[in-house]
Amino acid sequence: MPNALPIYLVSLDKDHQRREQLATMLPSHHQQFRRISAVDGRELPAREFFRLAFGAMKQGHRLMLPGEVGCSLSHIQALEQFLDSGARAALIVEDDIIGTDEDLNATLALLPELPENGVLICGGQEGMPARKFLFGKATETPGLFRLARYSHAYVFRTCCYAVTRSSARRILDAHAEHLKLADAWGSFFRHTNIDIYFANLLAHPEDLDNSHLEQERALFNTAGSVRKPSFLNWLAHRLQRLKRKWGALMCRLKGYQQLLPRRH
Image (tube, rainbow, N blue to C red; front, side, top):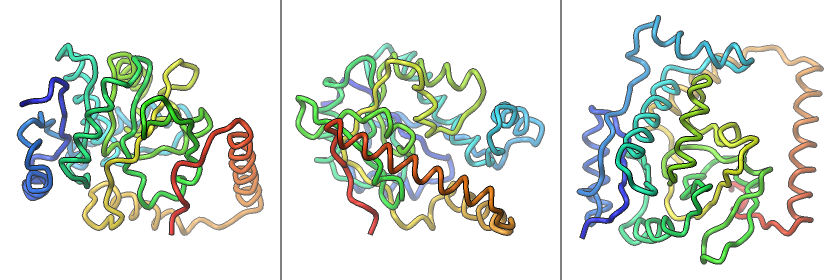
């Protein structure tokens, strides 16, 4: 029986093989997916790309990559379709998630428990160095944790998350100020009452060779690695490291627990 809450699948038109693999992996659910025809930012006209990316640069951020612009536009489409649907909550996934029908059932079972002022990250932190900074407190629902505000800045990816109407509107409002990275969780909910919840149920491939966006980021990072090190950069790095460690210590003192082990 179809689930009452919509599941949106963000996938490029050309990625037929990924969708076939997903159908094999999730045979009981794949027909429920409402596909979002993802935007390939690499195919945007230059004028349109820079118009969209310039807002972040004016705020002091780096230039977004074409794939990042396309990813944000794709998830904006998913959020808008969800709000148009009238549903209370929705699950949004990308076509490279890893899981079973049982994992997806467990994920969907959490959506009715998600407070209206909440967003749920359903996993997908594999291979991320920042995963060690995810601290949370258990809720009354087994397996569901509310993240410390400190940890909002250390959640990444948009491969599997759930939103309510309030949290979806807040993300769209943040993008309306200027286009942001699709996974700018720490920015979306700053100075709001939106809480981020976490349940480690679905996964993202650790091998990123098949990720369009991660390949683009790797190329960008390689090009940027020619910058000469400076004392100021070293000092800024050290201060950021101390800030992270101090924040982690404060979380522990306040009773938050580390949710994920360090990356192996």
